[in-house]
Image (cartoon, rainbow, N blue to C red):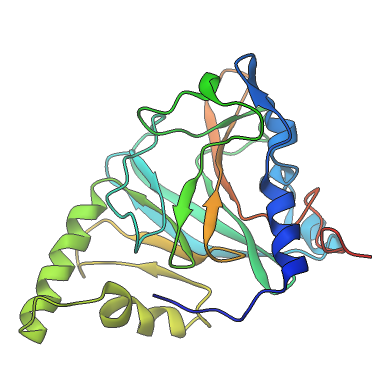
Length: 249
């Protein structure tokens, strides 16, 4: 289990307020109220800098099947893929940093500014079943988020088996035995992790802003419903602005 500096009560409450939806119900989910940070995915680097947000382009994630998994890679690497798929290929991942934290992450599928957004869901999740302040997000219990292809889980299992053989032990910890060194090289903020050297299929791993919790993922779509970007909001900012902390004086 990873540990992070103690969060203040005020900071925790601000984080919760930033990503809790205002309204959702049988009539449909109001995405504009669920997240005020969606514009981060469309602003230029210069516009982001003007809002005191630093964008870091961490490289491309290899989607060998086009079935995307958004998850805490240590808790749920076998999480079901999102219902909406993309054409297999290599897609760039960007991280948005504010107040010393990863505020959000995006996976860019195609160029363009989304004209509408939808909550990304996995099989069995029905947006119309949400009530009140409910939303679907993926659970984080190791302080990490990620994007990867569903097929990459098999490579993670292969890497785990390699480590078991190397250690001559069935008792391994993927973070301690594999990821810690890679992440520490980037101040524990991110890594483009390749489970098996020489095999296509990597994992874009990044610090999940406030650490543990449950975080929503959104699809940004064009006028024809074509996906342009996948966006994860970690609730560090409000209104896509890093100049003032949420709830600050």
